[in-house]
Length: 394
Image 1 (cartoon, rainbow, N blue to C red):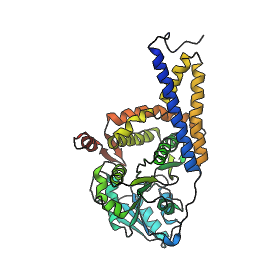
Image 2: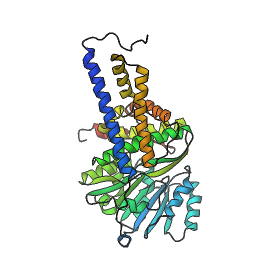
Image 3: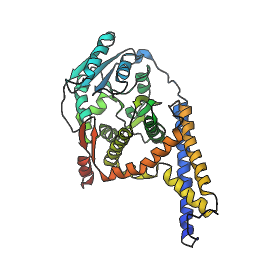
Image 4: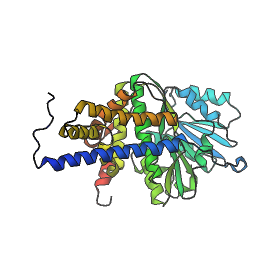
């Protein structure tokens, strides 16, 4: 005879069980609604009307630091865009960076595309990537400027898809990273973080009109940022995309996401690499948007699954079977989303998704309990953001 998880029911436990049931139902409903919303949005792309004769000239600013997986492929994609008028400005801070050789070779191999490499480091903030971008922004010849990380794989219609989202009332168009070219188990776990969790919630929020900037790709109209103080204004936060979100909203404009996210090839990943990257992002979200970060503890399947187990036990249903059905529904919905949207998904996805959700509470606690992290060998901290948020003015 199976042993119950709970002692004999008492009067005070009845409200607790109803609360557990309500929480499980609410979390599951939000999960399914977000899956359906993003599946419709990212799985049914409609090519917007586009007049090539009216295409404004665009500058791509690509900060480069070190040799990422697939770096030659992602940087080469800068030269293969189906757009009539654009230039590429590559920025590298360190004259000894091994990526310089690759960038110079690509520029030489594509003489038809105006491209430059600028080397040097202007330190305007504690954010090394932003410092690397400053010279590119200042050197841009055009008023439409895309800041795009070196590990973004640009499709041929990259610029067009950004511009068509710059509708009236827009201050910035972005794309979160979509994990692709994943190799190995832990790269699959990172896809579970990036694609069916973070991309899903970002697109769901954007659909509700609550878009957040993402530093992987940011399309600016120069005057929008210049009115806020120029690119140096992005140093007001430890993360430049958080500063961008606040600048755009303060101007009464909206951050919008591109129709479907652009890929970031992952290659192989190790457990420590996935953990430290997610911990860094967790601490940045907590420092820059603590009110939005606080509910993240409820974002995965673990707490709803525990609530389902308690309700099943109280109802004399098989606990293990009930939790298995719940997880099948939860991760099955995510797998369906990935299939509809055409995102990479491993056959081991249910295990990878479960591992992701087991990590989420620890990452959430790590976000609150620490401020230090490392980005590409550069020690960084959210301490200044923490002090600013604690001040009476904030």
